Image (tube, rainbow, N blue to C red; front, side):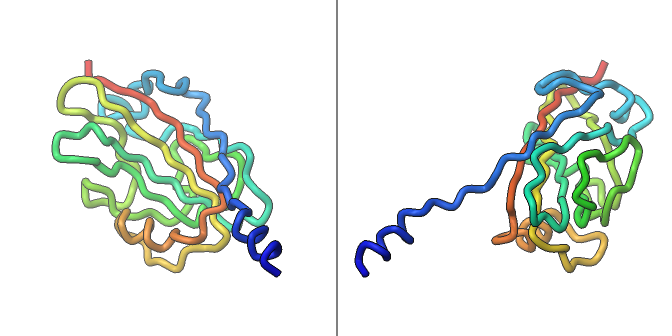
Length: 160
């Protein structure tokens, strides 16, 4: 009995890692102006690999941790169909309110210097029961205990 309990306690549960890429920019590379406030301000295409079996939905959070006032949320989307591609200029799921106070993608627009932009994708074992317009804190809380895998892609941008 003690050996059985030890075996159960020694099993480590790990989240899987999603492979997040974009055909628009390389990891840690410069995000093209098209996807920023100096361009068309549309979301870039995002590819998602290694989606685990049992995934019911994806959530994507794009934010800028280098913003002067703290992390700035640019795009919050949940209940995305678990597929390997989010197309450019799309609304792939329900959108939350970003720091601009709107429910849509708003691209990089740093006030000064080069900023990093994190596209974080989460594979979940359920659809989130949230109303459109929820903020990031609410979405993150709803995802707790339901994340099967996660991954991120980082891009950079500096205004010209």
